[in-house]
Image 1 (cartoon, one colour):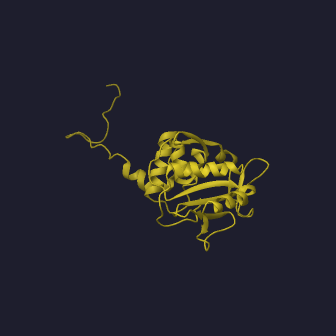
Image 2 (cartoon, rainbow, N blue to C red):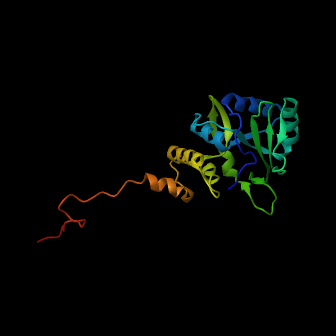
Image 3 (cartoon, rainbow, N blue to C red):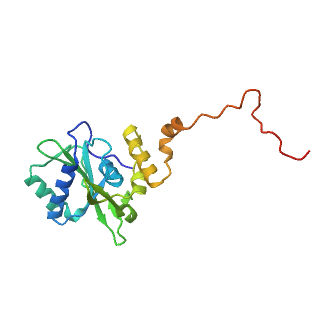
Length: 206
């Protein structure tokens, strides 16, 4: 569905970085939903791979206060040439990146993302996920929608690792975008026993 503004290789975001950010967000009353790789690992309850950034969803009404607090703690905006009002990146002094997805909640609780005419949103059902990071309960994107958000672009091995783990854990169908991986895992057809054709024996009465 969407690619984030952050790209390239950067210092890994560890669980303690996630929790430290959530503590700061709580200071300004901002609800944070984990998205992306850390959203996946929160749903799975364990870290499955390194993460080069932290994808988060936050309401627009909290952005200014949260950004001011992060700047006071040494963060700054990066990748300015690619940012948009609803998607931007802040990096710490050590280069650890937080990728913000800014939403405006409508009366039904859907998180509208970007210009209204584009029609992108986090449906209310997507904002109901619960997971854990280092034993702490956190809000995150729900598994069904996190799988859906991993479609519609050129997916890679990292995407497959996330999607296959979510589908296995929550008994979800694997999207068609991942047929390259599912086809590779399909069992080979069984060969008929030597001396027998492929047709079954007749079972009718004599």
